[in-house]
Image 1: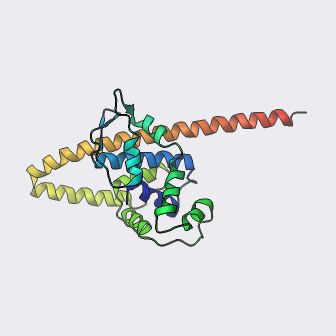
Image 2: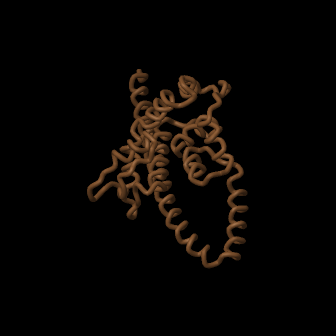
Image 3: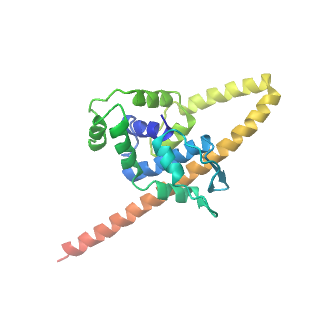
Length: 226
């Protein structure tokens, strides 16, 4: 399973502060793909530019499609530009992929189309994997979900516990830990760039929605006028 697939199940199964719009989910899925491609060392980030570094396949059809669509000539594209381009219709593409290849089969169609969360959950290895990753407060998944208004109530407490454990390990292995921390900081910096780009894209998308609502209201008022 990949981070986009896990995020999709979290968006279906975990209550959010607000309804998750399909456009928002598409942007978040594109961000999740980018993070997985970074972890797989298929791409790297040069400042905010997405730079391909490898042409090897990941073994996942959707991630391989994402990698194949990368811009491979300078000046490349920014992380936010990637989200807008790759994210176009991406939630529907993942839905279709899971409906056709996932163990849940056509039941996923019901979950996407019905807002009623009382619908019976379809058990699957994919869903269990996502639930386990969410229960472990995996940082990438938690960060992506938070951008969609899906909060992990235990995340702050877990992070504090993890921080104490990390400090203890540093005390025992100071030299090795220093090197590990440097590598982790590099990864964290790239994650921060992707999540920041996602936040900016989501803000811009909501601004577009608000402008459309204002325009539609103004149009309706014209026709209501005597």
